Image 1: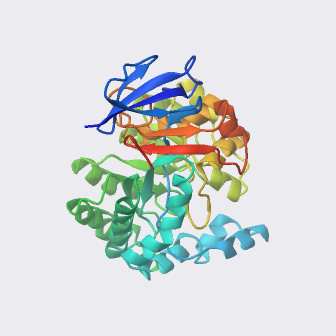
Image 2 (image 1 turned 120 degrees about the vertical axis):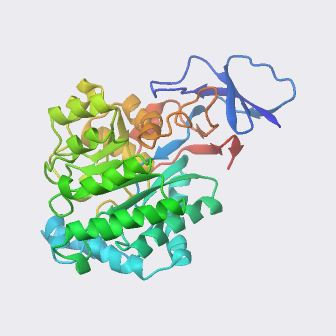
Amino acid sequence: MTRTLWTNARIVAADGAGPEPGALDLLTEAGRIVALGPDLPRDGARIVEGGGRLMTPALIDCHTHLVFGGDRSREFELRLEGASYEQIARAGGGIAASMRATRALDVDALVAASLPRLDHLLAEGVSTVEIKSGYGLSVAAEMTMLRAARRLASLRRVRICTTWLAAHALPPEYAGRAEDYIGAVAVAGLEAAHAEGLVDAVDGFCEGIAFSTAELEPLYRRARELGLPVKIHSEQLSHAGGTAFAARHGALSADHLEHATEADAALMAASGTVAVLLPGAFYTLRETQAPPVAALRAAGVPMALATDCNPGTSPLTSILLAMNMGAVLFRLTVPECLAAVTVHAARALGLAGETGRIAPGLSADLALWDVESPAQLVARIGFNPLHARIFKGEIV
């Protein structure tokens, strides 16, 4: 198996704090990192010159709704005219509008619609993407979404993690029957999708316009029985108790968190739950209450950032812009922003032992940048300085 020595790169090895002193060598073999250090032996290795560029772990987008049909830009106009997210949702827009468009597409059509969005992320150094279901809202349509997500991984050199999010909204045919929907679609569909090998994790939307913790309980209990990790959309529009619920279930992550409290932060720290902050939705919805970053930081909760790419509330396909928004809107530091899309994002997907850091034994998922410092990755807007994306040791 060919060994590759990546030489003369300024490496950000772990927590995003900055490049290691001087240029280092990185040895990879069979898609994994073997060694990191100065002047590593070159015997029999293919040499790749880094040119003194900054090298980071490849970036990770740990919360997306990348696979969907249709367009909801009219809702953008409605919000500009004064309508709220909740008003639009209750009038049949929002997730329900995407449901109708998504149900009309088969796997091939969903892949064709989603591939350009994926390519935008990959062009910014992303090598791992989480993709949720949640716009089908029937067993068949939710499984079609996840099959499309899996297909994307066969068309591009990328790691795709798939999340079952049937508990995203209540479709019209189940109006007023949330408990029936959870049992007949969310739980039964999860069992079918898991049997087909389509599910890496389970998610739910805990909110007044979605589901309560009591309604979500049977789904999360079944996920744990199947050995699947759980996540949650929580405290986005109100404090509905989703974060405490997620912590009780040992969730990988709790996402959004605008209305989370210091008590929620303490529970997340105790359960090891990652806070996934989604500034694209905060920006698009023109929210004013930011997540409690100071409380999360004080409690030692790891914070990740993601695009939340979706057709209505975060039509964002730039992880670099998500980093900038995390700094400007949520006051994250530069090291926190870089860690948020590498080591902490990996942890939010249960991949801390596989990717997200430059360390021996991990997958050789790397990015080379034409920048002097990590601050340039965060500070610039609309500028992509990626020189090369490396996935499992190969330049893509």
